[in-house]
Image (cartoon, rainbow, N blue to C red; front, side, top):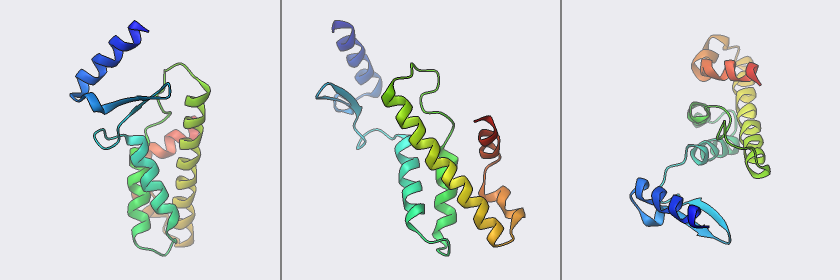
Length: 130
């Protein structure tokens, strides 16, 4: 327990705010009002894009923003707990759905040349990597 408290104190010091890290009901979380989380931003942009029709002009920009934020497995290299694996799977599934949507939209518009602008090259590489 002492090691946890020391680590928590150090993390709060690094972040520069005591309220940045919350401990509630045995769970540790970052306060999103003072900490930017790329995974949350990804989910926000993905959700906004999913809520729009393919005809909405804002869809492409939101898809591009979301795809640019996804950089592979969440917390890659960390011990794989059930909670972490579930979060990784959820984010990857959402990312794959965005990639599919991007490609299908380009196919519908017969705009294959534009796929490279809508779909970052790294997205294609990640899809093949599994």
